Amino acid sequence: MNVLGINGSPRIGGNTDILLDRVLEGAARQGGNTEKVILNDLKFCPCQECEDIIRDSVCIIDDDWHQVYKRIKNADAIILASPIFFGSISAQSKMMIDRFQCVWRAKYMLKKDIFNRRKKGGFISVQASARKDFFDNAKSIVKNFFAVINVDYKEELFCPGIEEKADILRYPDILKKAFELGQRITSV
Ligand SMILES: Cc1cc2nc3c(=O)[nH]c(=O)nc-3n(C[C@H](O)[C@H](O)[C@H](O)COP(=O)(O)O)c2cc1C
Image (tube, rainbow, N blue to C red; front, side, top):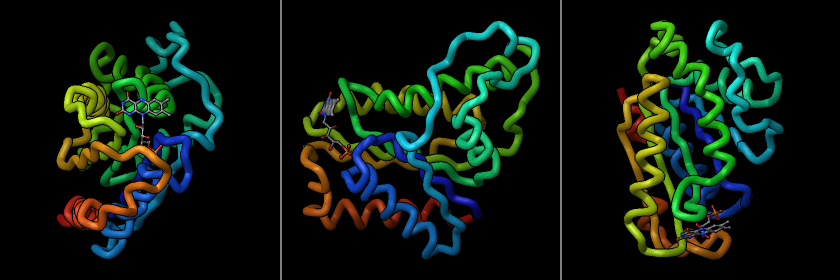
């Protein structure tokens, strides 16, 4: 099983990055082929609402976003990991998601299901505060995204009260949960 981790945090070695690594370690232990994409390392622009995608059903902007698109297409399971920024997912994560508007149009307007093979999905997130509504906001965006690309929302891990870089290392119980999430999502 190909398990793709998508890191939407700009802070490498930060909480999201550490948690995602732990998920992928769990997936690898279960026999999965794992890969991690760091959105902040890629050069891609936000959706431009190009008219042409209505005809083509493929994003016509030529940038690094297509690397994510290809990897998602080849994956059997996807873990999206994002910190909470201003009450929702990070800008990097949202920009990546918005570019899938071409797939949304293909699916719902042209009736072409490009992502016709179902996949499993998980969402992990960290934030400094204890606010549940922020995780709910983020989750609703991710669930909407997963529905468009035919990913079944199977797993989630939300970690409140985590602020400084690598704070998450002080919580072995959460790291264990991340590892186990990776194992579960890789099991048939
Ligand atoms: C731009 C920005 C916005 C943030 N907004 C929120 C927020 O709305 N609510 C919250 O609880 N934490 C917020 N935080 C704190 C981060 O969610 C927190 O520090 C998290 O652990 C960062 O994860 P990372 O190390 O993976 O980047 C914000 C941090 C930044 C940099």
